Image 1: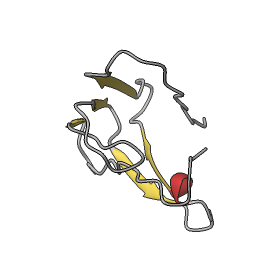
Image 2: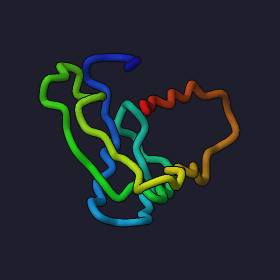
Image 3: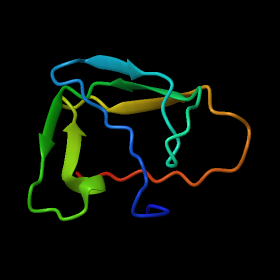
Length: 88
């Protein structure tokens, strides 16, 4: 799903937090942005070391029956390709 092998990813790391925010995320070319995210009910984090693609190696998971939500903030007007990857 990446553009090049040098793409930069914004890694979300907030183990045990019921809600956390990241601001000023970077674009895939590492240039700065005003975009942010707020993640709610993702209290667990883990990795799948068998996965060869680093983009899918780490993951967050929800607590119980509640929904895990991700809110994107300050996204400039434009056209974007957004991929949401989830398993049950």
